[in-house]
Image (cartoon, rainbow, N blue to C red; front, side, top):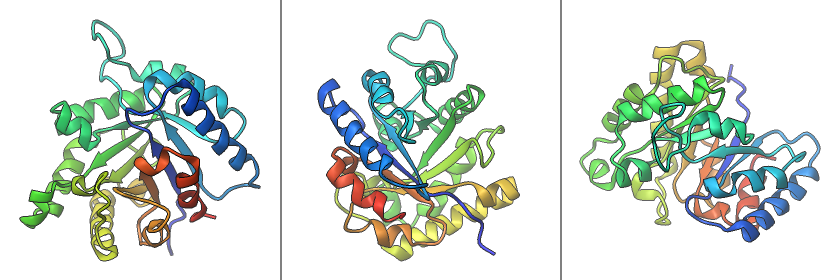
Length: 253
């Protein structure tokens, strides 16, 4: 019998948006969500840190969840420019993304650091969305499962459960490129992640949600969301306008 997992459609706005356009986008989505009666999915918005408070106000009462794009592994201290998980929670966030490939590449973040950030997020009461994914070169060399398996094993903290952790598979070569793996490729990777999680976390591994990310858009979302063990999407570019994001959301209705 298949385990019931509530789909999550998450928008990662990355380093995009100013106060005006960000609030307008959030208000549009909030109005659409308020028009739904008991939606069978969750929606999450992860704006830049500068917009979190304003977006939180704009989506209040809509059921839309709020998240951060990263957090420090310490709860406070001399870490100029960083933001702690506790600060995100204080702003009303329920989730935070850690280990995104752009953080891994641009800031040299390895699995150990990602694990420490995820643990800190969970300790602060947030749900950690841990990202894994292979590069084009790794995929070409047939190392996809090896790479994401190690990332999963080394990035997952000891305090992870199905309630406080979500795994997002984002093939690096598909992010922002318009390229996507085949349905069979996604199915293979998500089945592999599920088997690893089940072996390590038992029932929690069965219940934990797995998201797919990487050039998700309205034209391919339904096909991707129908794949076994795909329990939602982590959406980048297509989350930057309500008109592009909403068709992805509608695949869960």
